[in-house]
Length: 173
Image 1 (tube, rainbow, N blue to C red):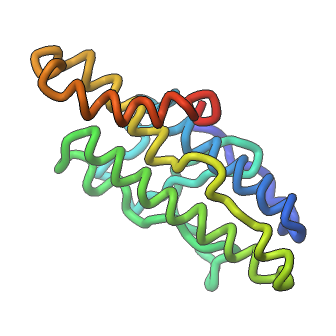
Image 2: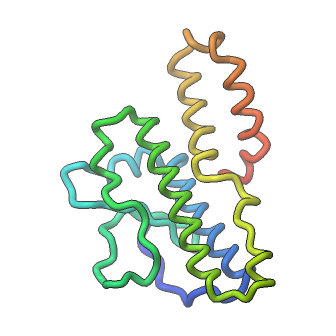
Image 3: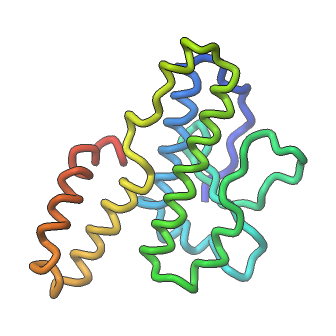
C-alpha cells in the first residue's frame, strides 16, 4: 500500500482538474492491476469499513474514511473489504473498479463546480479509459490463462473486448 500523499490545494483550472483526475486514476488502476495482490491483501473483511483512495500523485491507499464531517472531498465507496470473500475475485475487483470510476468522476465534478460555463464544457474526463476497462483487461488476461478450456468458446467475445482494451493498454498502465 502506498503512503498517503500530502494534501494539495484544490485544483482550480480545467488543466489542473484533469491532471488531478489522471493522477488519481493512475493510482486506482495500479492498485487494481499491477499491485492487485497487495491491494487484495489489505482489504481484510475482518477490518472496519475500508475505502480505496487514489491520490493526485498516482499513489493509492486503502484506509478508513475521513473522520471530518463534511469530508474535504467526496468519499469513495465505503466497506469495499466486506464483500471480498463473498464474491469471486474478478467480480469483486470489477465491483471495486466501478465504484472507483464513480468516485473519480464525483471528485472531478466536485472541483469542476467552481468552473464557469465555458470552462466546464472543456472538462472531459472520458478521454481516458475507465478504471473498469483497465481492470477488465487484466481480468480477461487472467481468465484466458486459467481457463484454457473455454478459450475457443469465448474467443469471439474476448477478441472484441481485448481489441478495445489493447488500443488503450498503454494509457491504462
